[in-house]
Image 1 (spheres, rainbow, N blue to C red):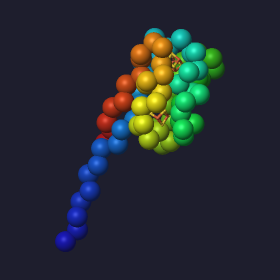
Image 2 (image 1 turned 180 degrees about the vertical axis):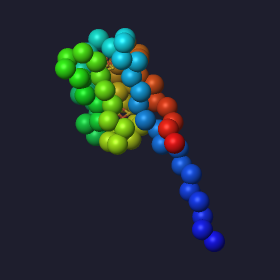
Image 3 (image 1 turned 135 degrees about the vertical axis):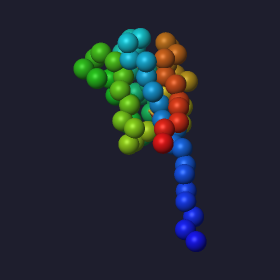
Image 4 (image 1 turned 90 degrees about the vertical axis):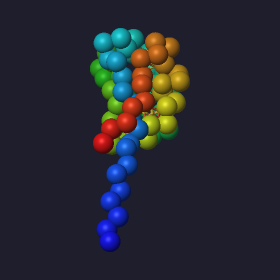
Length: 70
Ligand code: SF4
Ligand code: SF4
């Protein structure tokens, strides 16, 4: 019998329109998964993000959420 594994993955999401591009999230990410794009707003590389939540805890604007993706 084949066991089907359906596992949700947790990833960071940034409300980019409210990002002040401070870079605090970038400094604490253990996977280098979040970058400030052209000095404008933070962007998450979902392939690298492990959903640890460090960036969300550090963001002074509280605009990062950790959500589940399929
Ligand atoms: S949730 Fe963790 S791995 Fe993902 S971007 Fe934030 S700090 Fe990096
Ligand atoms: S810590 Fe928050 S406000 Fe600062 S760059 Fe990251 S997402 Fe933007």
